[in-house]
Every structure is written in structure tokens, then in C-alpha cells.
Image (cartoon, rainbow, N blue to C red; front, side, top):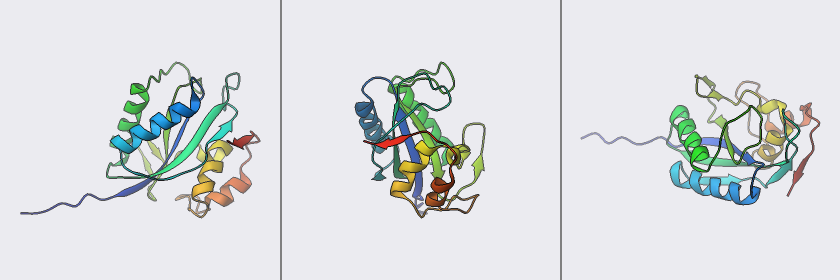
Length: 166
């Protein structure tokens, strides 16, 4: 009788939101992620950041999580989307206000693209609000395509948006 061992994968997630009680929503998202996806191994501080893209809206709270999961990228993304929906996320407009948003930034060293998910996250290197909390918990992590550390990417990001640690 063969025994299969599930492979543990490391993923970095960005959670954020700008509607309702932002801190409570992040805590609820962390709880649901640890229950439905896998253990959270490391968390960044929470950062308050100006809205990106559509700027006329409340500031966001953002946080990066390092998780372990047996899920592959597409099932992981589907489960994250389910958590967003269960928490009350309604998608009305791109970059619009939201109760919760959960993105996969990196998954192992995987470079992957499907209609559901692109890895690494295609715009992570353009956004200070992503790189600052990621750099806090994984400064020496290498971007699998650019072969630069997260610290190096943060030093060269062009995004001038303020990012304030809470």
C-alpha cells in the first residue's frame, strides 16, 4: 500500500482592506487563512497606506503573511477568493474600496501563469505598500524572475506613496 506525502509549500500573501474596522478585518482574515489554508509562520507589522490606483477613498491597512500550505496555486487562489466572499467582499470596480483583499505574492520560487493566478504577483515590484511589509519579514528573499532581493526591490521602487507602520 503506497503512502503519499503532501508537499508543504511556502507562500507569501498580502492581506488588506479599507472598509469597516480594518484591524478586525485583518484579524478575521488571518484566522480564516490559518483554518482553511495552513499555518501562518510569520506576519509583518500592519501598515497604513494610501489607496493605489483609485486614490479618492479611505487609507488601507495592509499586512504580509508567510504561510505553509499543501495547496497548489490555483486551489489556493480559489480558497482565498472564497474567504474574501465569506467575509463580505463585493467586487464593484477595479482598485475600489474593499472590506478585504487577499493576494498571493510569491509561492515557493514558482513562476506560473493561468487565467486565475499569476506568480509572482505581476505588480508587486511597483508597489511600496507590498514591498515594505514583505521586506520586514523576508528581506533576503529572491524574486524568482528578477533575481533581486526584496530589500533591493524596495530600495529601487518608484512608488512615492507613504507607507506607515502601525
